[in-house]
Image (cartoon, rainbow, N blue to C red; front, side, top):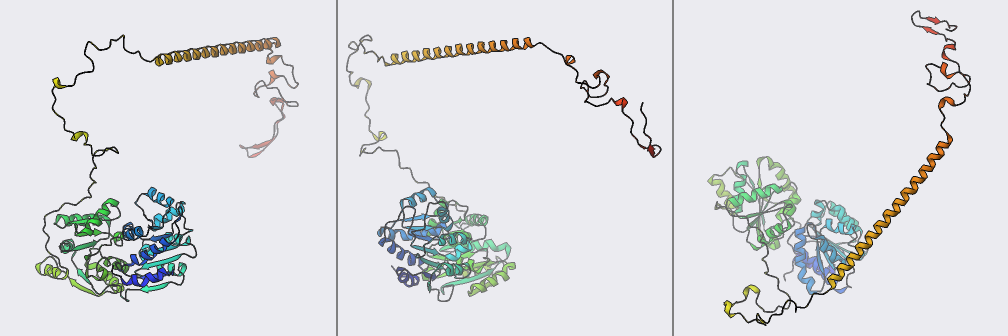
Length: 538
């Protein structure tokens, strides 16, 4: 196994238990730089307890987690170290079951890992080692809250390893807050891009942008095309297939099976062009990528570094081509200046022969075949055939048996002839258990009817008793006699017959006087506007 600079620089310090801060480009071999020391350390310790992993590797995307898990799986298996991938889009129940059994090393995305910790499925109290791979990209994706939550749960004596292409901004705050006297290893040589990577910027007119992109993608070798939106990935991939260039789209809305199929086909060389968004920029780790083409220029120099890091990996040569519209020229120049790269700039006038020849010389493009190709789809697994019971051995299936042609006359004779068959009367009678069940059922029905009759008799007796009580009460009321309201003795006051315009038949209160006898009150005459004299009465 060939050792990369980052491996030689970090393995010794990681085995010694020190915090390590590594600055390295993508493809420099840092996965084994932190994975091998972690596996060696875990193999020497005790078995993990339930829900308490001993080491965690945080990665920004699910695709990168799958690649890290695949890279470390052979070494972990050889050292008897259990390994589990924990990421969104995968079965959470299986991840919970693995944590319940106990696992040494967990490769996880920050969001899913923080969710499992909050719900009590994972406990970080026994964590010995935590690795943050591509920390700058995790910070750009908005995982800082989840990362700080996980780091806060790591015990004080835990070892921390951080790897990133840039060490500024949020990454610098993580280093100052959670790492203790880290050993820094910078294997970039002070340059963010390798010397074997060429950068070409083509200023193209809007009406020829996608035709030139298709011509460049028709070159030989693997090509990754970056665009800004998910919808653009599908449209551009379809246009390239219609022009005869086999391309697949990959973005966040694609299912996990489709994304895995696209990356596998691209890695195997079956699909030469992969159209992706920035979300998949860090998740595509494929060797021997010859060209990175950016149809939509990135807005930040870090995104440019991440995109261009897909090519020129492990010392190989690579080419980065950026297509720029006239109104994007100034912003792209500022972005490239901050990225610190040497760029070859050319202006493409259109689709004339001279311009196309210049594009072909710079990028290796060529005229596509213009014969549409179909989009490959992931195939369903083949059926395993009919279910075979255990212990069947090599017996042929029912459909595979060879049946001989037999005539009706050749059938084997019966056990008895027609005259020797047992008569109906001589046949054994059926068991009487069914008759016994019918008798028992009839008895239960009779008992139920008897209970119903008793209940009805009790109800009838209760109704008769109630009617008797009501008759007695009516007789008592008749003995009291009936009195009218007029027969009541007077309580004093005026005669109720002389009361008019008052409260009906309600008697006067004591001391009250009739309305006609009340003295008139004075007041104010509205017609004369003078005080009204009181009247003596009617």
